[in-house]
Image (cartoon, rainbow, N blue to C red; front, side):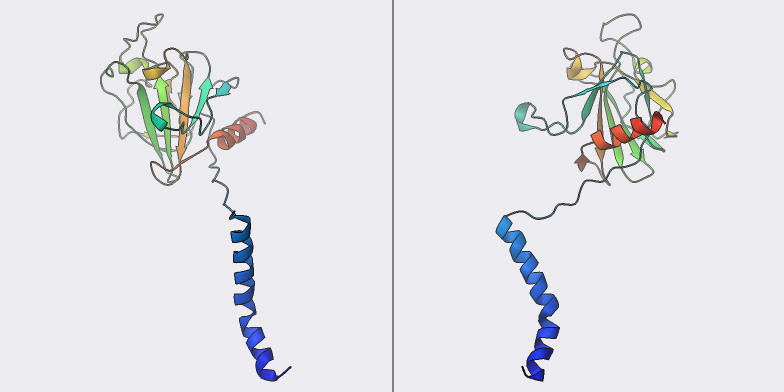
Length: 196
């Protein structure tokens, strides 16, 4: 083999390897997908015993997909900030019929955490007439800074959760709103850390 051919093979080797790998991926029809990030969070409820249902990606009416995890537990269970950050989307008046109390936590880690179906009942009732003070921690306002583990609200069944029962719908959006990932791995890891 001539010296020129050896030089060409030596220089072309990285390109040939890349083409081979690319061809293998195309032939299988699948490309490696990086796993979704799993942020380190505090578990969003003071209760350890919760039932996860209606998981991430489940179908919803109108062609929508479920972007979170539903965690069923007792009504009025305190809801915690999962990271340090700033709260937003806090209602200042009772929502219109069919709408829910919710809160968005803009985490210092660059992610956004959405909590939905907060309490909308007056104490001791199921009247759907509770004011914001029964949904959110006392005095919580839009733009307020909170610390991980701080109480920010209370579990309920506001919005379209009346028939399902009291639960927290929880979402994680990585880096920006409308970039949801399944929160289950982060939730399970948070529960495991709490139990140790």
